Image (cartoon, rainbow, N blue to C red):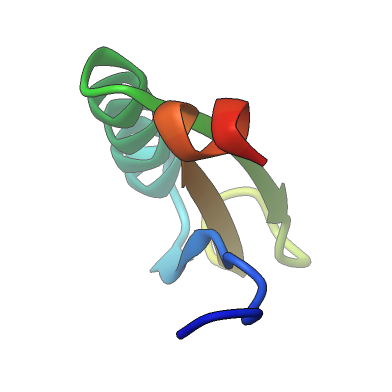
Length: 69
């Protein structure tokens, strides 16, 4: 739509314990960057390292569209 602001692709993932969510987040960021996107990630750690829930967030925006803006 004309005049509508471009928005990034946003992904939120929930994980329990371990480092699997962090590995998946890294893969998503690397894949996005290899395919022409600017990507960033962050996380909010759970209470306990191995048993707490962790929320991972990834945002991607087309590098091509970013240059056009």
